[in-house]
Image 1 (cartoon, rainbow, N blue to C red):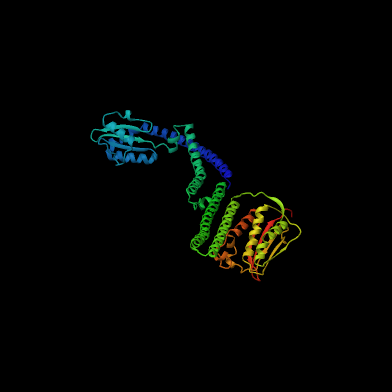
Image 2: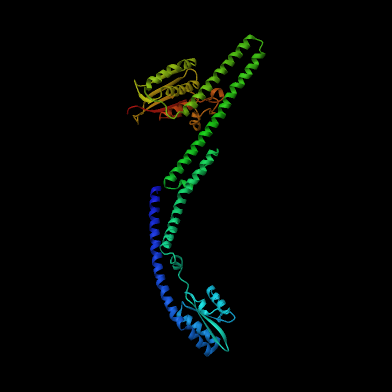
Length: 457
């Protein structure tokens, strides 16, 4: 239920409950007032002759008859209570005296006349007998109804107090239903800010069907993505550290061997080896910087460009590397395919995929590059790069697009591990709204397929 509808319904529920409570209390108040008036009149009529009747009963039958008379009169008048107290302060039937009756009995025993103890809720008459002693007869009307006691003396302000109480309870429940998820969000946000990336708002808030539930689910998704990003950054830092350590170690070893080399030929060979390691190190650092810069860009500047011309340029750029291993590059493409993208990053994506294919292709092999429209969807272009290398295990086809992934010795760079070339390709293609995947060819080798949206259908 949307939060607006929840507040709207709660508002009207408060109004209805308040009106209903006021009406019911008012009706009950009127009924209790009428009933209290009737009981008061009946008590006055009963109290008018109560003293004379009690004196007559005492004269005829003594205290026992007086106790039976009090009990019989109480049963006859139901809600009116008749109590008889002797000069010792004890009730003849052993009943417990209410506070007002105890006060009247105490005043009577101290010598105060019964009239001084009378009030609107108590009638008292003193009787005596020469042989049986003195007695105090008390008439106790029933207690006033609770509603009459609470609201009656207050009048309209009492009804207003009832309305404020009902509306206050309803508003408290509504406020708790709104503030509780906010407190949960605050707690999770504070935990996230303190570095506890596993903090979540929990299922209770996420199951809500209003805007606060949507906010909780979005917060959990944000926290999960932030945890993955920070984890991937930490993993990237560990991988970069490992990858940098290997060429640095080889440089240190080559430097030590160069210092000890006495033969000029050996010294020259060691220097060339050091130059190669420095070049690899520089290339690795450049790739890491490119990968970090690409991931940090939210929106790439886009332009309309010809994908076929871009692919042809990339093929000519890497052709010398393919010729170094006697590998042939074959490009199949139409005359023109217009896509909207960033020329520099699309070029790097294609170049990295092609260099990866050349790096893992055997000598005297062929690498096929195909650029075309997607048959099932004419709004997308497709680029396929297929090599004749050893392929990749099926369970690692997605892993090759991760930075510095460790695969088999045949697919890794000299058995030491991969770089970030394919990771850059994956990120660049996704930045363009496309997709990239790898699959093993039936005849052997690996095929990498990139899909990119076209400018025009």
